[in-house]
Every structure is written in C-alpha cells, then in structure tokens.
Length: 304
Image 1: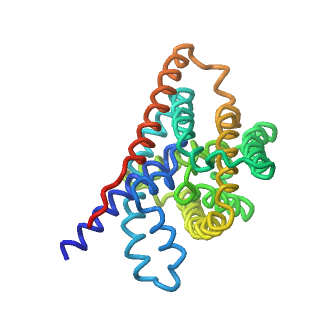
Image 2: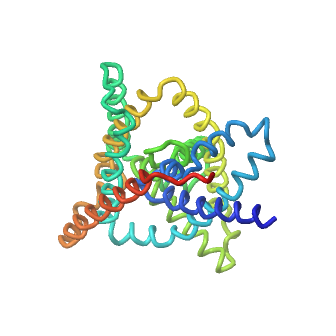
C-alpha cells in the first residue's frame, strides 16, 4: 500500500511538472515527460487503454490530476503578466524555445535528405502562416469564446485538440500554438475569470464560459488520444522525418510569436523600458531551457 501511494505521489508530482510546461508557451509537456522518464510509458498507457483500461487509468489519472492542478495554479500570474508585460513575457517564451532547439536537433543527428529538408520547410511555413493569417484575417479569438454557435463550438474543440499536443509531442508546446493562433491570452483570461467567479459564488450566473471550457476539455481529451496514436505511428515509421517537421514548425513559430493578431497591436503603445526587460528574459529563457536539457542528458542510475 505504501509503495502504491508513493508511486502515485511521484506520478502526481511529475504530472504537475508536465502541467507547468503545458501552460508555458515554449516549453513542451512531452519533452518534460521524456526528461522525467515517463514519456514511453505514458504513450503506451494511452495506446493500450482499450485493452488494459484499469492499468492505463491507474497510471494516467495521477499524472492528469497533477497537470490540472499546476495549470490552475499558474493561470492567474500568467494572465496578469500578459496584460501588463506582453513583450517581455512573449520574449521569455521565445528564449525557452531557442534554448530547447539544440537538444531537439540532436534527434536528427545530421541525417538530412531532400525529402526531410522539404518536411522541415513545410513545418516552418505552416507555423509562420498561422501567425500571418491571423493578422491578415483579423481573427479575434475572444469573440469565438464569447458567443457560442455550432461553428464556434467546433473551433473551440479544434483549439483543445491543438492545445493537447504539448503533452504528447516532444519539442512542441501546445501553449505556443495557442499563442500563435491568438487563443492563449483569451483562454487564460477566461479560466482566471471563472476561478474568480467561483470564489465569488457567481460562476453559474453565466453558463457560456462553462460550456466553452467543457468544449475545450473535450478537444483536449480527444486530441490527447488521437495525437498519441498518430505520434506512435509516425515515430515508429518516420522518426527522423517527423523530428525534421517538428523543428521546422518550432522555427516558424519563433517568428509567429511576434507576428500574430494577439500581439501585433501591442507594438504601437510599447513602453521603451519593456525592451531591456525582454532582452534579459530572453537570456533567462535560453539558459533555463538549456539547463533543463542538460539535466535530462545526465545518465540515470537504474535500480538493480
């Protein structure tokens, strides 16, 4: 019994680390799971949930509960920082992305080929277009979350699927993708407002935010399983090409972080002193990400 509780406590804490990564753009929950030594087991538990439901659930439940607690704990500070210091916060996220590239690039081990380079370019282009198109179309994510319709409901579910990618794709941050397509700040603000309404006893005065979150969670759950199965197939059959595509997507996202509908309007009213803060946080992000990667490269002592 003690051994069982200890194992669940460890999985819960590792889930908190993964959840922390999931809500911070530029940090991949999948990468953290890999560094903590539970990535393969997590993918296997998801892929085998039909055949071994109870076994898979006993592994996934403490991980998911830990991740959820971490996300709820970080919603308030991140939402506040986005409102008051958008450029420094985005630049911190960019630093975290840049710092993670060296370790991710080791997975391709100089195995370039015309097809793999083409996959990298395609990944880069897709990420870049996500940001550019959000500006050109003036796509306002806040309006999607404010008014429910069949079309908006489908969009919210799809956004949840995108957000879930952070937990299962090493190197890809679901929060970064949400930031690029303009949903990150509106979603964190929505969750923050719902938590405030819960403490004030007014949560059920307006059901729209609750329904939005239900749809978003449905998307996360669906995406969590579908993307896990897809990643299992791609990494089994086309591992190197898959990582070329991931790296290309991350490189394109670095540009899209600074050019998307959600952040492009901030430049006109940007205080000058935000720039040196942003530069400092860029360095901090790079150093932090490199430190996490170096920790993950240390040889782990296996029990005999």
